Image (cartoon, rainbow, N blue to C red; front, side, top):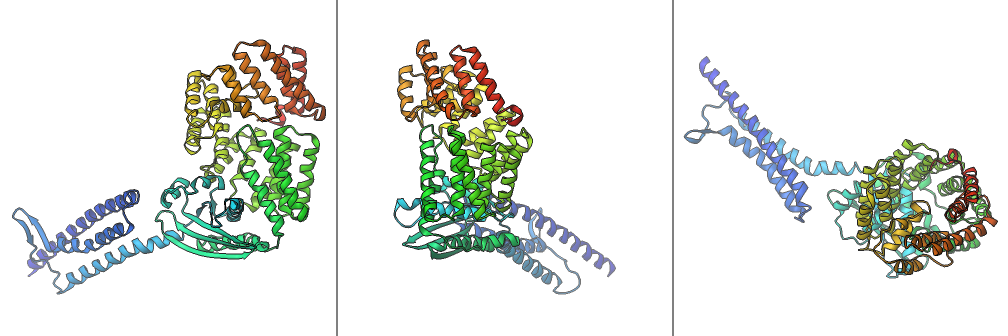
Length: 609
């Protein structure tokens, strides 16, 4: 009896071990199959119900495999039923088998549906795709884009949520890509898409939340208000999204999203039109100054209607600052920038856009970098997820010579703007300054895949090739590659901004004749001509071995700069331009004098960039 009992125990032990081995083997194979389903079915366009069915069958197959492993043995004579397996207690094995079966089925159901529900609760990053214009009128695109920008800004107020920048989402307008692919490219858990419809003074925003990995629609709702209550409407949509994904918000964040002040519909219309000018600023040589000047007029129209519109004052200040810094405008433009931002802060001291405008002023006009950082940091405390603010902090740190801190912030901004040409270009620039050329080239290659029709990308690649020792041949290959999308002359012209006023012309990178280049250049640069045009023309004639014409254009630079210096003698850029022109004209003493004056106005200790 004891021998029989021991044999039975031994047989049962063997059975249990075999079951465990089969369970491990089956589990491993099932895991591999699930990974294949998860990684390939979606890409291949196989319907989701097919993957769900296969996973359910794998789950149901587990208890079947366990039962077969318990009941049968594989022997040299073939598969035979196991004999003598008993615990001495009738029904014990059947109960165990039933328990295993129920556990497996329950685990499978939880893993597929319960686990997925849990993953939805873990949404910590989001991208808002461009909203659809349901008005059927392209002239209303500026209004729809304004709603898109406002929704992203409002979500960026939530510190615990990663929100992808607007510039990184623009490329997905009518892209036709599936949501899982978009989520993967942007590195987010969920996608928000929606539409805007406007009928007279009534505005309706529809928003829906989509789980990035599964492409499952998690939530959708409509929100509608009058235009004078548009701020409350925008905040309501952002709050609803935050509550749906169960993201943690601080009391301050909730309070800011609960704002519901009324605005003038007419003033808001002009404000959105001004924002549209700023958003659509071209990186091409032509048009930037005229666009900024038009934006000033539009913001002023908004303020004529509602002089208490703080956000319009803030945007007006930013526009004045850009005109002053990038286009060598007289000091009164700088004073207008300060007046506008002071008024914005007087009207609303908590407005992040006002502190952002103040940061721009201190950085680009006043050149007080500590105050610029303080203003940007204040703006960031309200817009924690703004890639623009993080990038501006990085720019200030570059000017201070804080290279590693600047790089760290540019990398953070790039995470929020993975497809933003401006941010990615800035990241490539600082890699260049740090002589980390391999990383710079990698970023620029990424940029080219995003915006193959942007001249600045090719100009940066040419500059990198020349600076890193890639040579003339590599630069020429880049020029030829750009010709698929644009006239290479436009790329060459941008070199005047990248390699300070000296450009790429002297390298002889183009296959065109000087006459052909000059003809094209005359269409790229706007009237009236500026010093960049004259510098370029001088260098083209130098390359063509026409020294008299080259000298005439360098003298045109001199005349243009001296006229501007009469009204703005403390412009370090104008003094530097004058020094270069004098140097090329052979007027050594005057060149040194202008160069020293430029250095006094902006010493290296005051700006390392």
